[in-house]
Length: 70
Image (cartoon, rainbow, N blue to C red; front, side):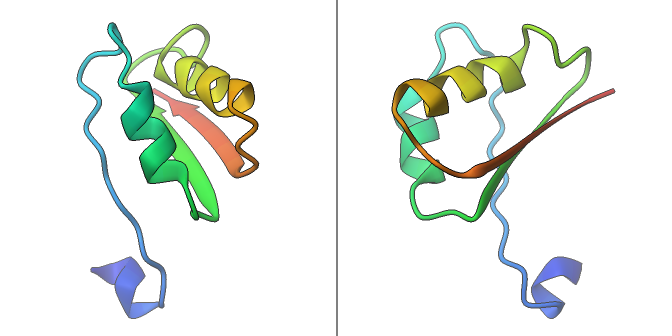
């Protein structure tokens, strides 16, 4: 709601498991977006962000992309 007040539209997708990865969902939701950001509850190396990056790269989807891990 706070971002919407600033004119920023966002979507949140809960990818609670990455195996099997829902590549169709990633491609559908990335289409037409300005950026894709992943957040995960561990290291970004070899996790969800890496898997999403692979899907986007293999399908030649050009979108700003950032991984965050805690």
